[in-house]
Length: 249
Length: 315
Image (tube, rainbow over all chains, first blue to last red; front, side, top):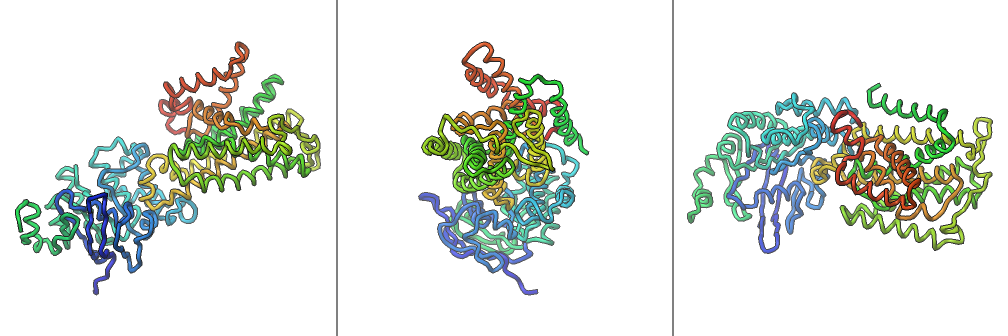
């Protein structure tokens, strides 16, 4: 099967005052892959995916999704096209129940973001929300206020909201941060099942997760692509080692 | 029927029954309270559920009031048409104001709505030839009489007026309940709780907020039109800042983001002011003190506190 390009960025830049957080990134994502983006702290990883999701506007460059230029689209329109983002700093609705959190994502997907009307019967919303909650094993906590969940469970709720959107591209920003080892195992298995339907873009610090899951890895450093390749290639790359260990390449 | 629906039907039935036991004075007060609680319910859609504090709702109330009152006075509209004119004008004005004011958020939104309402109030004074300003206009008696189902309906009749006000209140409670219980209500609350996240779920929050402003403004205008027609008077006071603050106060007292809170808040505040004016001419001082105490000790209001402590299912 020929590789289909899902997402492409060209010369993507974002400057915050004097700091160029993302400095001209050319990046191509193939449909169906699991791609990890790694890099030292401050490498521009979160800014990079924020540019893709539309939370942050680029200073220069273009973003193409499924062959169409989405650079100028606001975030909610990108979500509707199939780019979902789960937050690095957990951003569920703390006062709403676990169910309502997932239901919001479900009704957005069912109505194309209108939130009400065609296709979004309460029963259809409930079915879809519960399916997502079941996949992350939170169905039994549906009536609990999301803000009272343990941190790891809030992370999983974030993932469930991403799932209920049924995106083409799911961006996971440090999803395993704060999870226990057992939960991380569960998360790896879950991500594999997600990847059968969607392309996954993963920002991750946990190298075990990255090496286990990623088909390819992109290494960012100082806002630029330092290296790109399979896990084995990245492991053997001297420049990557230098960036992580602080030596000179 | 869920217990929530049952409760609201029960409240409406209770209000219906009250007309047979109340004195003339309390009968009239309750008519007023019912119409003004429609206004408070409208305000609550935007403030309680969507989390947008407008300080200019008097503009919407007065739009309905004047559209009904002036069309009855100058164009000879009878009550049903004048009422429809009030609602239509409220819809148009809230759409326009919403589209402009929603470009701001937070404090700026409060200021912009306040300024629009002040402009509206000044306009009612400026065009004094038509509105007769503070002095106001007493509506022609003929405009408050109309034929319905073969009978003549006269809005000066206290019993009839009471029941029409009750119908309007029942419909508004129904609309409010419907919005809250349907998926759209969940989106409104999501915007209140975390708007950036709501956007990242694919919702166009601007359009949803505009929807909330239009529903809120139109209900407020309906209350304004009903006030004009039920009591046969329109005047600039209804467009003043006071009438922007009242619904906030009623909603806070009864419980923001509860369907019945605004109704209860209006009722309690009316009786409180009534009681206070028996002792002092500074009854507005009582209003102020109540507001301060509320914010300090009961930020959730009466029904908000009841919901938090005892009845989590209360919509």
